[in-house]
Length: 368
Image (tube, rainbow, N blue to C red; front, top):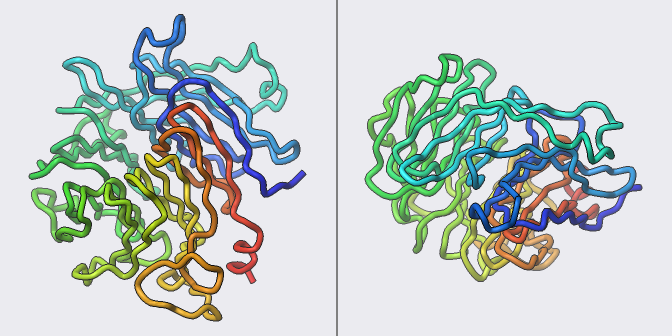
């Protein structure tokens, strides 16, 4: 039973990160991490939930539960190549680290509806000690190296996980960092947001950024993501509530600006991994927005007239806010499905997990 309606599933505890199970291309599966202080809920510990959207019954269900022994799940990054590998981060007094886990993934359909079998194993494989709290962990986007980058307050560290977790190289930042994104078109490059700037780093010469985009926002940047189809294009979000699109070859002026979509900090922005006309953003104003920014995509909708640098709010322009969802609490993370290009998931701090759909009207505009 197909439906365009949102589907909700509540974990009933604070949560702040969600990620699709990237290595699984056959099912709409997402990992959601809880984030509450020890002792907040009696006899309850922080967990990672594997949730599965069942299209046949139009329902989002918890498929597996993994105990997270390190406590609050601050960041979570499934491996791009191996669906059973997962990096999470935590913060404890005098201890900051990212941890590589191997998780047991259920494959038998009968297990999905059996509450007794939902508790699954999560085995620690390597502990990556860091100088401060890990803000982000990002896997290198290639099929050769099993490499992950961890972003801390003033450091970026690269780890070669083929070498028993040995640290390869690190660099020190001059400002407090907030976000990290690998360039999918040049796997030696990554973008790092710190203060109001974005630095482009080449990991082969990691001492300093090869390029700096200066003062791209009025407030600190919060998230970065590269266009998956067009090289050199980068989107940034900020505490100033704007989304800005940049060509790093000409960083002096943004290509596009999306205004008025949020009334408070934007926490996350993500390109659709297949159709770069589409993006999603979320913020502390409890809002999730779906955007269509066609004019600077790899396949512009030519019948729609380009109306300048700003995104519009009507159906006639190429760059519009397509839909808006408003939750009850701040929304810190969103993720596109690895299985279906037209589905995405959000999680609110109240633990409400929501599966969203791209409206059919927009889907056919892109496909036809």
